[in-house]
Length: 393
Ligand SMILES: [Zn+2]
Image (tube, rainbow, N blue to C red):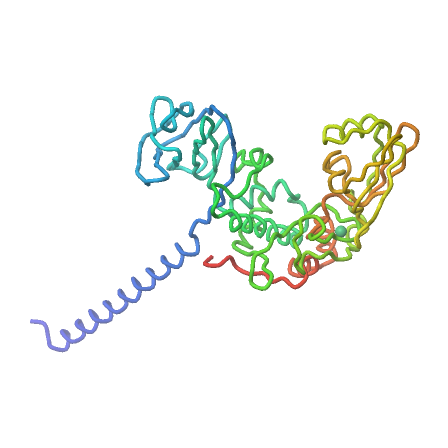
């Protein structure tokens, strides 16, 4: 016989157990829900191949091929090694005919898609456009930031300079995701395809900084903006309105006294008449004999606005931006320069490397060396901005 007291105790224990069980399951559900919400994938779409007629595709392990339009699974399999071409009705994967112009390839394992010998993370989308095809890589934004950070900065740099830069890279990428939401992809990048050799290319310190700042972006008045950056400003960052007609307070340009010791603070280049003439001719400007190059104006950051090329017969006006792009951004490292024509040589002496808008990366390096935090660095180069979490992140 079980005594009434024992019955009551066991009933109480049962009720307490039930409450504890409900509490735990309720909370674990909440935690799971919150966890899956916080970890919700946020894909950036990068065009990795455009307008090609043939690809070599390899998938390691299980995969699904899905029609992007109807979301129907067209094919399931394991270990694919085939070619991709187009045919009149759609896309052809070896002898698998996919009667659609857009399809997704979803591998079961990460980093198991190999296209033309290169490994890609995430999923890929194949898009047929007439007789050509393009490949869009869908990659988690944080993985993308890890990939580009390795290329855009050095993992040896001070942590706060890395944090500032990683937030800038993420902001720029997220801006492109918003800007191009209605298009087939967010970004194209030639350098991108060199980046994703797999995780072997990543660096521990940068990955740690990306993880620690996950989801953080810069906003101005609650809105994302194109957080441009460049290697070295040479003394003053530039106003985005002059280059791209973007007129917002964070991108108006600031004095920078931090990058004087950057290896790119000063530059010097001597080009021959022929080199300059050939480059200008490729850009559509024919010049017989460069007698002189005159600077017509400079902006408040001392960058040249326009130049006049003095020929034997006629003079030609060109914007400094076009002049730099025509000769090559690594030949004319910035538009802040002096130029002299000395006999057959054209001598350039300049300051800084890059377009000069937004964050000066070497300035950020030296600010961090002097003890400034990433928040101070970002506040300095992008005045009036806030650090925010990506909405719903
Ligand atoms: Zn600077």
